[in-house]
Length: 115
Length: 111
Image (tube, rainbow over all chains, first blue to last red; front, side, top):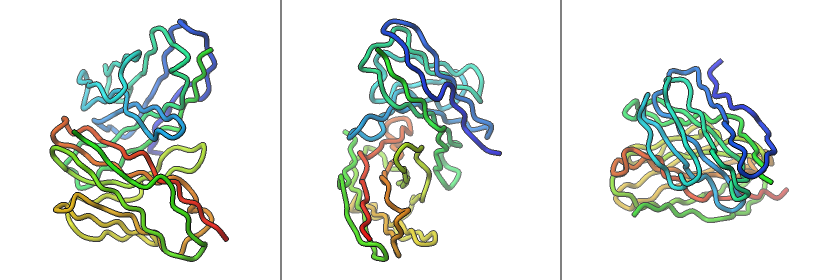
């Protein structure tokens, strides 16, 4: 089954404690991205990656890191989480542009609370 | 700069037709997509327009006019399950093909 998986689905942590949210896709997609969603603000892109070892900042990259060492995985790292990073996070993947469509496949989301 | 504008909220009656508009400003338009998101769920893909005109998928249709930098999503025969948020998104060639998102339109359907 084609899917994007994220772990954990829910996480409560404390300020300053490093954490990683994993994202994996099984569709051999080149393009992967991370979003955060806050009430009334829609989806805001944090980082995206066009392929292995290629990452770019989105609209709200401060306080986040990513890596793309393998095509299927795109972890999101919060080195020193702060309460303003409390949010709902989504990972998404898609094939490269030029394939006639632009379908983003989203993971189920990770609800993060930083105390 | 890049921007997308869509209404924050639209209300319609069950069985009716509703149109959600999206106007965009980008440096290199590549395509316009629409997504649906129910409360607590992940966004799911609805449709994609790269060329001018209408794309139809069942009760949902999407329209694009590149000369007007405008598109819309048309939902027909509205059902209560269509109550959700709808997002337009534009792929921007001028920003390394970054996907730019609108803030979303909350569709409220009344019986």
